Amino acid sequence: MSSSMLQALFNAFKVPDLRQKLIFTLAMLVAFRFVAHVPVPGVNVAALDRLFAENQFVGFLDLFSGGALANLSVAAMGVYPYITASIIMQLLVPAIPRLQEISKEGESGRNRINQMTHWLTVPLAAAQAYGTPQLLNATAPGNEPIIENFGFSLNPLGTTAIIISMVAGTLLLIWIGELITQYGIGNGVSMIIFGGIVASLPSQIFQAIVGGTGLAAILIFVVLGLATVAAIVLIYEGQRRIPVQVAKRIRGSKMVGGQTTHIPLKVNSAGMIPLIFASSILIFPGTIAGYFLGVENEWGRWLAETVYNFFNLQYSWGYWILYFWLVVAFTFFYTLVIFQQQNIAENLQKQGGFVQGIRPGPQTQQYLYKVLLRITLIGALFLGIVAILPFLVRTITGVQTLSLEATALLIVVGVGLDTMRQLESQLLMRHYRGFIK
View 1 (cartoon, helix red, strand yellow):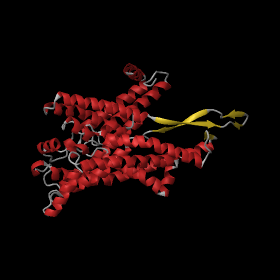
View 2 (cartoon, rainbow, N blue to C red):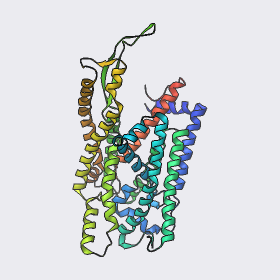
View 3 (cartoon, rainbow, N blue to C red):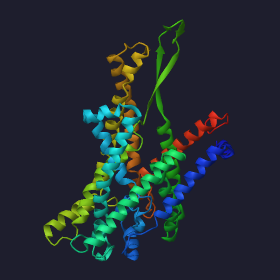
View 4 (cartoon, rainbow, N blue to C red):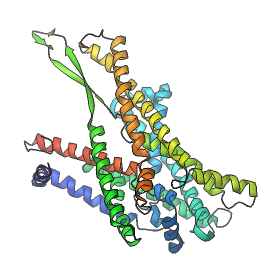
């Protein structure tokens, strides 16, 4: 498998347009890493480093910024506001009839939905740009501020400049991601997150070694990580194939149809979306509570500390139990939303196809629905287990400086597989052997 992958990459570089796409993608990722190291003005670097060394919660927030939050750069929010806006639009489209009509208008409809998503990203990014420094200041060790005099009442001009620069950084990353999608290889937004995760991995390993982590614990961590990646690939690629018979029809003077095909129902149709949904919900209370950790009112401070500690990744059993069930619930929710939008039974009936032994129409829809629920249960429970894997790994190995984040693994594996598929299809079009045999 590895030799075929290397051969396929070699073949890809021999094709001029594919070589150009690969080089362009790498160049855009390098540009993203440069942007991720441009800090906003007034950052206390020493206090910021101590905060990330002691707090797992802000480390999790750093995931979607691709490591830029650890530097409090202009790209500190990463593409997270855009992801949040995309999730909101995905929920609104089936709920609002007008948006549903727009989504069915083909390419122009998709462009309008995408434009609305960009508009929604700006206020979300502005709100997060104001909240992120507030959260970092509130959780800084020793009450040493990360950014001094941040706030409209303390420094309105400086605060406005920081917010504008951070929103601009997020929009710049979105633009870079869209350039990768259009002119490079893979989904641009996912590649941005992928690049940040891969770039931060060596520093995590180095910190674990410097921190005195034992060799046995690191080996257990690596084995668990590899096993998790293998399981993610297995579930990600797993599908139930429903055999379909297409009836013979006369079209003009020709007889068409009569062949047998199948409907592929994936075990994990939702991908990494349930983890992002659940993470977004669980991040929100802890983020809001972080703003009030330094209030003077004793009761208010106690409530903020209680909420913050519950939603802090490294402390609460309750957090991980809630995370597990939210991931399971959102897996079913998102899978069923996608299934209803596809109208498989209706489209199958229009094409003269049918599942053997099942009447076309509503009965086929009910049959597919039951099968989908059964296989989604496996995918949902698997995603739930992967979601709580960081807690399980830290409990088993005692390694606190390494964090096997489920969302990070899913992004890395998912982006890797999608990129391989794109290269595969491009190579097969040019009569080269690709990754898949």
